[in-house]
Length: 184
Image (cartoon, rainbow, N blue to C red; front, side):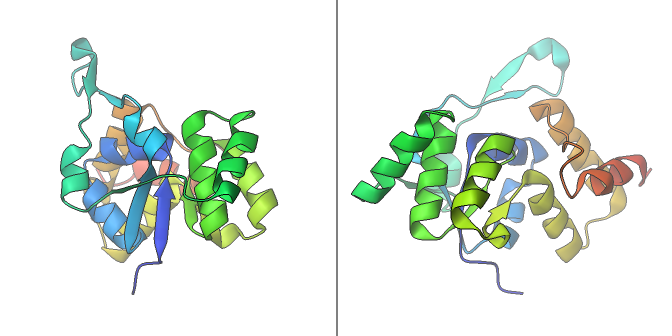
């Protein structure tokens, strides 16, 4: 299977994938090229430590960028700039810029933020251009036939280090719950 074209990832999905410990493998399945907008790159990204007593760990994205796992992009056209300004009035800057670039360039967008998802779907009118953390992890785990016990560990890492679990509106909510229950 050839990965879909280009995927732009917002900060919430980035944090969740980093927490999984499998970001490189997941993104390799998700797209030919995975991008972050410059605003997301500049945000301070933290994960909770494995030991709750240790607090937060700062994440350095430089190795992922140097390895070509992630590419940084910025607003390139007046259309993108206008979309960004429009969306920044109702979303945070990283989500607004990611959404603006994805819409203007016809790229897939990865976000778990409900309002950003709604706005993107209204503008793009194409649900195939929108994905979530749970969909990315599920697609990867099924394509690579990840053992249930390993998958359960990865999902628990995302839950504990990123404080993420798909909402009940997420199409993969029950899959996630079942996977966390199964596998030993």
